[in-house]
Amino acid sequence: MLTSLLVSVGIISAVAVFLALLMVIADATIGNYGEVMISVNEGARELQVAGGQPLLKALTEEGIFIPSACGGRGSCGLCKVKVVEGGGQILPTELPWLSEDEKRENIRLSCQFKVKNDLSIQIPEELFLVRQFTTTVESIRDLTHDIKEVRLKLVDPPEIEMTAGQFIQFQVPAYELTDEAVYRAYSMASVPSDSRHIELEIRLVPNGVCTTYVHKYLKEGDEVLVNGPYGDFYLQDTDREIICIAGGSGMAPIKSILLNMNERKSTRKATYFFGARSARDLFLLDEMQELEKSMHDFTFVPALSEPEEQDNWKGETGLITDVVAKHVKNGAECEAYLCGSPGMIDACIKVLTECGVPEERIYYDKFA
Image 1 (cartoon, rainbow, N blue to C red):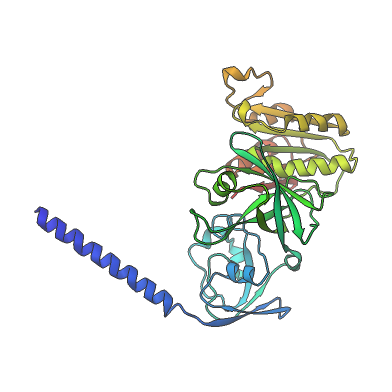
Image 2: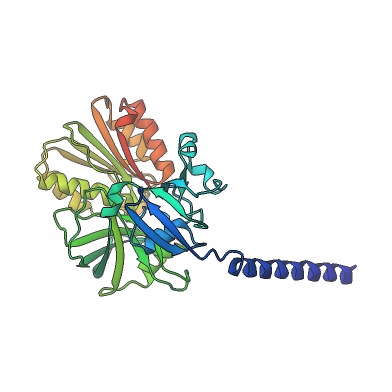
C-alpha cells in the first residue's frame, strides 16, 4: 500500500513538473507576440511595444503612467482604460472591477490583460501631464511603531504641481521580496506650496513589498523614482462645513488638505475625526493642536477604540463611527472627506448618511 502511494505521488509530481515545463515553453514560443502597435487617443501617440506584457507595464515603459494603487496586482481597480479595438474578451480577473456600463463601453483593467496584437485605446488627457520624478530621501522619521514619515526632495524635474489630497506612485527596486521593480501608491501629506518636496506616511504591512522595503532598507540619501500626481480626492470649491475622517496613514491626504486650507486662510468650519486603537497609534498631535490655534474654525477629535490602562486616556473612546455619530447632529449642509480601508470607508459613509450628509457630498480615498 505504501509503495503504491509513493508511486502515485511520484507520478503526480512528474506530471506537474512536465506541465510547468510546457507552460514555460509555451510562454517563450506561443506567447512571443513580437512587436505590436498601440494607438493612444485616436493617434495622438503611437507606441511600438513588445507583445505579451500587460498593457499597464507597456504604457509605463513608454512614459504613460496609469494610476494603480495596488501596483498592478488587480486588487484596486484603478488602472482602467478604454480599449477601442483589439482588446479581446474580458478576463475573469477583470470582472469584479467593471460595471455593466463599463463592460459595454470596453473599459478594461490595464494590469490584467496582455498586449497580444495591435490596439487602439483611450485614456484621460490629464494622464499625459503625469511625470516621473527622480528624488532623494531627505529624511525618514518614525511617527509611530509602524508608520514612517518619508520626506523626498525632487531632483529631476525639481518641482511638482499637485493638489492637496492627491497621490503618487513610489517605485520599489528589485530586492528579496520582488524580482522586478514595482510601484505602490501613497497619498502625499505635504502642502502643495512646497513644490520641491513630497512627504509620505507609510505604514508597515506584514510582507508588504513596498512597506517592508521602506521600513527595513530605505535610507536617507537614497534615490527614489516616483510618478504622478494622480487622483480626484481634493477639497471641493464650496463654503460648506467639512467633516474629515481617517485612521493610521490615512492621515496623509487629510493633513495636506488642512495645511492647504490654513495657508489659504480658509474660513470654512472643519472637524477632523482621527481613529486609532491605543495611544501608541496616535501621531502628529502637536501639529493638529497648532492647526486648531491657527485655523479659523478647526477642531481635531482623536479617538481610541481600545485604550490601554497605561494610556491614561481622557479623550473620546470607541469606534470612530460612534464618535462621529455623537458629534455630528445635522450634516445636511456638510461635505465629508474620508481616507482609510474599504471597511472603514463603508462604515463611515453609512453613519454620515444617517447623520444627514448627502452621499454625493461624501468624498473618499480607499486603500487598496
